[in-house]
Every structure is written in C-alpha cells, then in structure tokens.
Image (cartoon, one colour):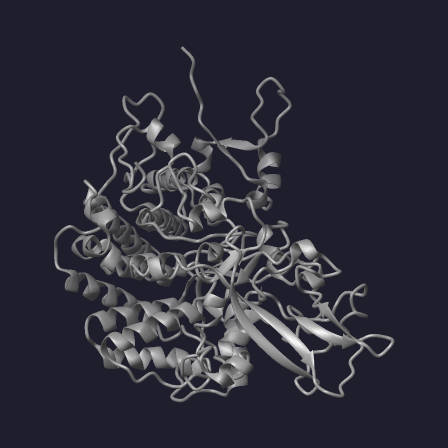
Amino acid sequence: MLIMKRTRKIYPYVLLFLLPAFYLSSCNDDFVSTQPLGEVSEEVTWTDAALAEAFVIEIYNGLGQGGLDEQMQASLTDEAMFTHPGRGINTITESRSNAADQGWINVTYSWGDLYKRIRAANIALTNLAEPQFDNPDMANRLLGEAHFLRAFYYHQLLRFYGGVPLVDRPYELGEADYTLERSSFEDCVNFIVADCDQAAELLSTAAATSGRATSIAALALKARVLLYAASDLHDIPTASSKSPVIAGYSNPEYLGYTSGNRTERWQKAKEAALAVVNQTTYGYKMDLTAPVSADEGTENYMVLSLGGGSKAVATDGAVELLLGRFFLDLKDEGGNYVGRNNGPNGYHNWAGNTPIQNFIDDYEMNDGTRFSWDNPDHKAAPYQNRDPRFYATVLYDGADWKPRTSDVAGLDPYNQVQTGQYQVTNASGGVTTQYGIDTRNSSIEDWNGTQTGYYFRKFTDPDPAVVDQNTRQYVPWPVLKYTEAVLNYVEACIELGEDGEARNWLNKIRFRAGMPAITESGDALRQRYRNERRIELAYEEHRFFDARRWMIAPTTLGQKIRLIRVFGTLKEGKQVRVYQYNPENYTYTYTPAELDPGIENRQWLDKMYFMCIHRDEINRNTKLVQNPGYD
C-alpha cells in the first residue's frame, strides 16, 4: 500500500531567516534518504515554534498587494476609471458579468484563492489547538492570528458573494464528500464574529508587530462585519423593496437577514465600533475642537495616506493603522510602484486609475458648502478653495508636482501637471495651441495619458528625490485603520438616531482635515456622513462595498463617466513661449463632459449587488446556488 507523507511548502521570502539553520541541522551523507529541499514534513512543522510561525506568516500573503495593484478596485467605482482597455474592468462596470466571465476581480479576492487561505488557517488552528512546542505565548499568538486570518478571508467572501460554505476544518484525502451547501448570511456573520472575538482574546497580550494582526485589528474587523450586516442590502425586507432582482430570489437567506430585529443589529455594530474608538492610544489628531488651517488639513491627510501613525508613530504619538500591508526591500512587489502605475504620462508613468469628474465634484468647498457648476465662481476656478483633502488625493491641471525627468524638463521647467490645451506664442509672434504634456496628445507618452483630465496622488511619496517611473516606494496599504472604525461608529449612531454623538465624532475627522463642523440631523446628516466617508476613505476599497450596501449603486456606480476639458486662452497683450499655469497670463475655461461610451459605457444592473459564483466553482460543487440575476 502506498503511504503518502504530507509535506508543507516553504516559501523562501518567509523563511530566509530559518532555512540555513534548518538545512545544517538536517543534512546527512546518506543521499538515498533525501528530503525535498523546499519542503518540511507536517509533523516537523508543528513541533517547531519557528516553522509553525513561518506557516502562519505565509497565510498573510493572501492580502496580496493590499489594494495597491496596478488595477485598483477604485476603477470599479465612481472614484476612478482604468486608463488601459481590455482587462475585464468594463465587464463589471458595464454590468456584463456572468458565471463564465466575472470580469476583473483581483486574484486576491477570488473564490479559490480565498478558500486556499482559509484551508491554511484551518490547518494552523487544528495543529495549534494543542501545541507540540514549548512556547505558550507564541502558540497563543499564532492561534489568535490564524483565527483573525480565517475571519478576514471569510469576510472578503461574504462581502463579495453573500453567504458561502463555512469550512471550519482542513479536508483530508479520501473523504466521501467534498461538496458543501452555502451557509446563510447570518450564520457567516456569526462565524466571523466568533473568530474575531477569539482572536482578540488570544492576541490581547501580544506585542504589536507591524503587518501582523493584533487584538485591536480583530475588534476593528468585527466592527466592519457587523456594520455591513446591519446595512440596507443585508436586511432582506429593505433590500427587496428596493430591488426586484433581490425580491425574486429563491434563497434570500444567502444575501442577508430574513428576520430579526434590525435595530439590534445596528446596536451591535455601534458597540463593536465603540470598542475600537475607545482605544485612547489610537487615532491621529482626533482631539481637535476646531478646524486646523487648510494647509495643515492637507498635510494631515498626506501623513495618513503615507502611513503616518503606523510603523513610525505619528507625530502626536497616536497610531492610526491597525493593520497595514507593508512593502520592504526583501521582495520587488507591485505595491512598491503606486507612483509609476498611476502618475502622469509626462513623467513617464502609466496613468492607471485616474479620478473621474463624478468623484471630483463631491469634494466640498473649504467652507463646507457644496461645489456646483451652476455657481459662476466655482466654474471659473474649480480647483480653488476646495476641501484640503482634495489636494492630497488628486493631481489636477496646474497642480505643482515633482521635478520632470531630464528629457522633459525643457518642456516644463515649472513642474506643474498639464492636462489641458493652452495658447502659446511661437517664434514669429503668432499664437498657436498646444496640448499639455500630461494629456493623451502628449509628445512624451500619448498612450499613457489620462482620459479624465486628472491623476491620482494619494499613497504616492511626494519626495522630489523619488522618481515614480523607476523608484520603489514604501507606503503601506491600510487594511484596517482607526478612522474607519470611527466612521463605522458614526454610521451606527446615525441609524440609531443618536445624531449628537455622530456629529461629535464626524467633526473630529473634519477638524483634522481643516473642514468646518457639520450641523445637520436626520437624513441630511446621513447624506453628509456618506459623502464624508467617500472623501476620507477614497481609493481604500470601501466605495465598491459602501455603494452596494447602501443600495445607492444605480445612481452612483451606474453613472456615466464624466471628465474635464481645460483650455487656457492668452490674455490680451500676453506672450508665453514656454507654458506655465498662470491666471495672470491666461483665462481658463473648464468644461465638464462625458466619456466616449466606446471607451467605457457604465450601467448598473441589480445583479451586480453581489458577484456571481464562477461556473467552474459550481461545476465542482453542485450544491452551490448561484446569486440572483445570473441564471
């Protein structure tokens, strides 16, 4: 009979510090009795604390690049569009997803990859239940991290697909049946919450280590899951009243709660978020009682987006990041190149996930009023006196940026983003019109130019010495952070009618950003909160889910993409040979327009509230029931 000996793959980038010692201790001269050089047996793994730790650390690789992929989830929302066609983005934004072709979903979030990580977490939990090595503190930490990671990956499945099969142990070879029905949405929420509670308890005494789960991270994940659970999309009576597709689905228990008290769900969400909010050592500049200056508001937001308050403690001593995905020299990872992937083509960058006008228009004026194209002053200067966070998030026409590379410096010695058309004076004194060097008509790289008139700045190191085209950047991705927990708390308070408490915490965030206090109540407060969340968490993979769970996607994600056209007309008597943004020399006009539908023609169909389960998964597991609208 063939005896199969199970082994575990050892990943070099995880175990560089372990392998030399292991090889030296295990090598022998009997070449007949060899062991695979890249693997160790399961029996050895769980009797050695270092190897057990390496196994659990590897499960974190399911975080991928965080959200700093070349194609960002923002481009599936009304935050951005992806500049380069043919990568499955349109399949989702145009509601053409189907069981054979879901469209682009980051592999990190794919059904199969998430279950692979869940299986690894289950293996760890099984073997760490009764540790075989003598280090109880290490065993508790690893057990807590495994509970957290299983909860995190199940939460990703839940918010994409609704209820999924709950697997709480590693399947073995030779089992009679590997198929399993979907669990209800409610059962999945309870399972994830239980894992978070267990992780929080086990990790409560563990020292914080950058990039690894902590007790507070587990509580923050619990708060997020419970917030989603209380939302419109997952209250089936509410969702059914807003969507005929959901109303006609035969298995609504997979999508949300079919019974129970929704107020109690909001109360649980509030209490879970408050447990994080009450952590006094967390939160960057959250003790202000009045707005900071506009310049300081921009600076504060840049500190947060560049990882301030994470590995390096924030300037006021408070930590913002509860769990980050960090990028180090050990690996050359895609997340290191956020500037190259998204920066202006006139800097030899790729213009990947460019902000759209729909997003730009939702930034308030600095006095807290709405921006409006019907306001002549706003229309004449749409980039002046906006919410200070705008200037830390978006590169717009005329924005100051980094020094140009040597081959471009002569065309733009002023280092300003050029996304419009401008009149200039030629050698004979005549007036001609030229395109900016960051447009799709650029003489530098026209194929990498923005379609929308904007570029993405957030998460990009502004240091002039960092050349985005070919220099790594080390900005962590915010997997979980304190500000999100505060916003979750605010939302739950609003839904429970506790407007005063909601305004108190919402204004702390606004004061930090240099914005005035919100004074509204009721639904008006709800709408201000939702826009505040949109701005504060921009490009952080929240809008994709927020627009769905609030069931506002038809009027937000379903909007056609809008862009801006900028034209600079020389004022009478002015002569300019080398263009520079300068209102003393130019009269600027700003014209919003709609993107050519042949490039991307967005529409919303209600089936897109949930992603479809891929046909291959249903073929493997015939007990799976497809989500509504895909049959």
